[in-house]
Image (cartoon, rainbow, N blue to C red):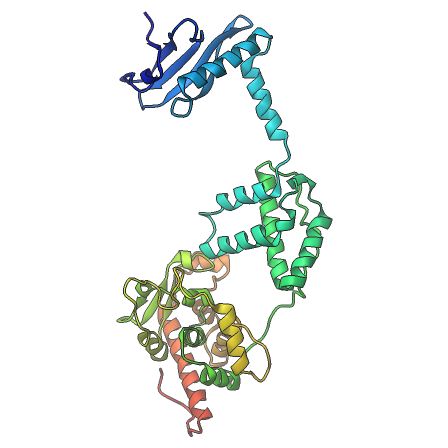
Length: 405
């Protein structure tokens, strides 16, 4: 006699097979049971309702669903529907395949593609890059979300970019444009889109490379005008280390070695994915030593779960009280300022580039694995010495050279 299921209570009482699978057929009352309905139980614990039938002289079967979601009565009802299809000359397996094909043909909305793209890139993007892509795609291009991806044309993208530029500025529009283009390129590779409508659209910013460098006098004005607080100390460290703002803003206590006077940024915290060691001059070390450590909080600056985050508001407030001679400037201009300053102080170009964690050309990279740690320390000490010198001269001190910082 074949093992069977007669009542709902039987479903999870049936013993699991030692290996492979066991099949229990519906053997309830004649007025209730459905011929061909069975419960397939596997050794690992899964229980699924399966309908066995013959069509065109061949034995076939089709899965109805998991027993945890489908009751015996519900599975019987579905099996009866399948039996009706067979009696009318329709193969349930063919009908299911046709339904899947039809579903695949339905137009996919941009919002769904964006969700899939962001999920696929979650582990491949750095947290900040993923957050930026999410903002650009989910917020900036929201007016396009309800359009099928293949219905989006170049003029739709161009109109959206113009709106973004008016509301948020040309640079933001260009960054959003890059994110959308990358998403479409991914969608094409996944077979979800046929073309990239971003190609051919105009950039919204002037796209002029920045060459803003703060003069020594401006560095003095900035340094002396900085108010107390985390943002001020971050700016001072950017001046002294040439780091990117996020590298200092999200600095963690375990990345600082006070005894060896250095910061070590892991590869996942740098733009080029290469671990970066930053020697600390005495001036930079004092800034870090002055920070109060909060128990249970791993970040040096800020109070959020990701470190310092009040960039925009803090920069606007600083610009209100500190006006530089040559006009507007950005935090990233400080990296260019340090690089230019190191060159003026006689630091070799390859050492200056190492200070900024810029990778050398590929051929050089292959044969030269030197990290130039000693040279970087000497360079940043020389730069800190220069900062102290111009600060002292601004106060009227009669100094020409100072001991290395």
